[in-house]
Image 1 (cartoon, chains in turn cyan, green):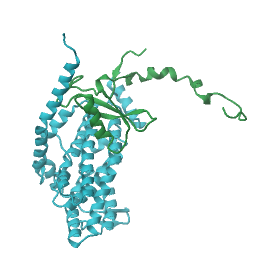
Image 2: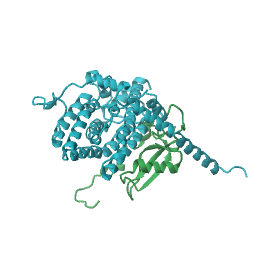
Image 3: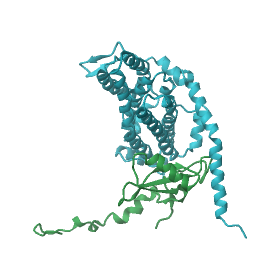
Image 4: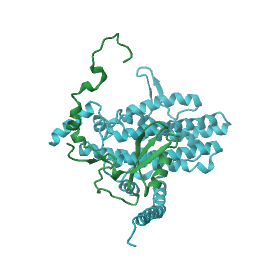
Length: 315
Length: 114
């Protein structure tokens, strides 16, 4: 079959909402684009464990500690689902990890911000996981089967993440003045980076149009960001916290909240490696990878040895 | 009739070569029985150096919320699958045999319990 015929079959499947599966023919750029997207997503889950891991030993109660542990463990699992989904496209996990550790692959810029207080753990659950869920729910219908299936699993598990974060903030907001101030301070620092999580504006996003055409993405960056602002603004009222945006205002005509301009210079700086914690995060990943090398080697050596024992040598 | 047997999605068409086993160990496919009486169902894959590790990792990754009562793991390279490119001819023979379905038969309404 000619490439043109194959492309027609592929387009036709997308048209009819039939999922693309690993063995199906797909355009090279579809594959490349998805590998980039899924692996970035996987890396984000893995690096995302670091800012929260920072507070596991200092969680204020056993309940909070158990929850945070479970959440961070979930992120590791989500990383694995996603690496496995990317592997079905013909890239190995080692290659992906290598791309992360050499700085060739990116991860979500949000994880380059520090977690300074306990309230940050609440803000991450509410806003960062909230934004992630906003992105991930439509990805459950993405055109590539393994990615969609991984997303369904992730979304099911992630809904507790957001709720636990909101509960942390709610508890602080109902506490002493110092506690409420701490919650407000966390919101002040996490609000804008959370909005940046949706990526550049649509007219500035190099991949969006093609991803929409391929039905990888179902909504544009700006559409999702608007939805997020609308929902969070209402939720902030429950907490009694003020969103740090003087331009945030209900627009009766659009039936949406208008909001201020994102500091794209900051976004670009963080994406390009100059955020507050970029170096620290990469150093932590490299250290973990290097210090875990002997475990991987030992496990392989053990399985080799066992295989040799099972094959009886001439007596 | 079936000209070629093909590896599944499971056995990931890696450009780095079949059966490539890096430092992460081979790939395993995980099947979980969610409750007694139901089939094992494919849930995903993972790397492990042997079957025991694969089962333990599968427990940690895929049953953290009581999703299963039994786990199967099988090394991905041992799974063979039909080729999607041949789907048309492969399943064509069943396409014109509607008489294999009960709704094909015209029976009077007064007939009960059939």
